[in-house]
Amino acid sequence: MSRETVAERLKEKLKEAVSAVLPIIVIVLALCFTIVPLSPGILLEYIIGAAMLVLGMMFFTLGAEMAMTPMGERVGSSMTRSKKLWVMVILGFVLGFIITVSEPDLQVLAQQVPAVPNMVIILAVAAGVGLFLVVALLRMLFGIPLPRMLVVFYLIVFALAAFTPKAFLAVAFDSGGVTTGPMTVPFIMALGIGIAAIRSDRHAADDSFGLVALCSIGPILAVLILGLIYETDGGAYSQSALTEVGDSIELGRLFLHALPEYLGEIAVSLLPIALFFALFQIFSLRLKKRPLIKILVGLFYTYIGLVLFLTGVNVGFMPAGNYLGQMIAALPYRWIIVPIGMLIGYFIVMAEPAVYVLTRQVEELTDGAIDSGVMKTGLSISVAVSVGLAMLRVLTGISIFWLLVPGYALAIGLSFFVPKIFTAVAFDSGGVASGPMTATFLLPFATGACLAVGGDVVADAFGVVAMVAMTPLITIQVIGLIYRLQERRAQATAAAGAPMSLDAYADDAVIEL
Image 1: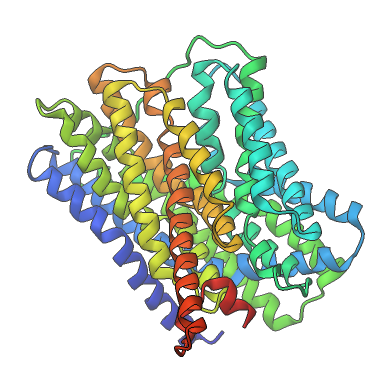
Image 2: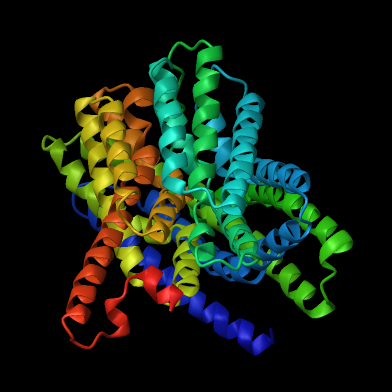
């Protein structure tokens, strides 16, 4: 990729990042200038954090395109070509384990369950993802229908949840969304595409999705099992503190002091993936110089992007989200937090780095049969609904079980009536939509509101990530149901003798053609 091409791609990614983040910035600024007063110093912290978030998204999306996706596809193809099942099982587990340990959001999750040592949670969750990545790979190889597996595993999840202490319940379901973040999703999704490329049957494209869906179940089971082993008094929540700055020098120091922490954290996160790929390059892939340099440059962009993204989000966004939640919930008309939360949820999903990766790969693999714009709109609507429900939980204290059980029952029920590819994409979307923006803005927003109304933070505020992960399962499959109904109507029209255009076919039919 030439310098001119890189510059053009960066400009394109900058436009995408600005269009994704600008609505959130406008909403927060509108709140600050109307009902939630902020000091000039804190407002500047938020604006600088937003600027770093935009630059981080720009570099990350280009880096994922240049490095993470090609790496995953090549490793997946190489694993399948070995034709040794035991090799695939071992490599799949190791890959899932090291990528999960690399996920920055896992550190945030581990700190929310004080009854369990951080390293115990991290290793348990990583083992859960590794195990279910093996399950997902075996499903692809043997063509096992995804809906059947989802029924079995979610029955196990809810059976365990019935016996798990309340303090672990919301955190367990949050973990399924948090651990499928910007580090995991691009690599795992590309891995699925690489493995599916070896298959020549007509359902290979459908089965290339669904890896993220199954990998999201592993962390939930891991934390639920830990809840049965460890005792807890309900845990503690450490509030994100707003740091008031007196001048521009203090403001600069605030971000500069945080930067080294994330430089080291992301370096440690990317290192296992880079080493894993290096071993594949030496012993199996043996890529030529040009594609190898492109991947290395892409890894550098990914690194810079994640450092900027996480620094901006954690220093500028997380404290602001917590403060906004507290101030809005403390108003005499606290019910307004529900529509405000829905508005923020509608736009915030587009700022998730992994959403870009999912929508682009879906559109490319289906040759445009599933439009990325339709997917983004569906995700925005579903996240808006989920944040609205999460805010209702904060205000009323409704158990998360009353929402998750019927939600997952409906989602799994729909999976038997929609085209296979929509089910796989829908369950992947759940994990993708609940990434770092949800963990670092919506979760503090909910916890701030919960503190203001005097609720139980662990039981009532946690669970917002789980809600964000659940609603896309229903929305995307409803889109699939509409496609199927359109297909049947088109077939009826064709049977009556009318000409039939390509647009009348559903995605499965277009792919087969």
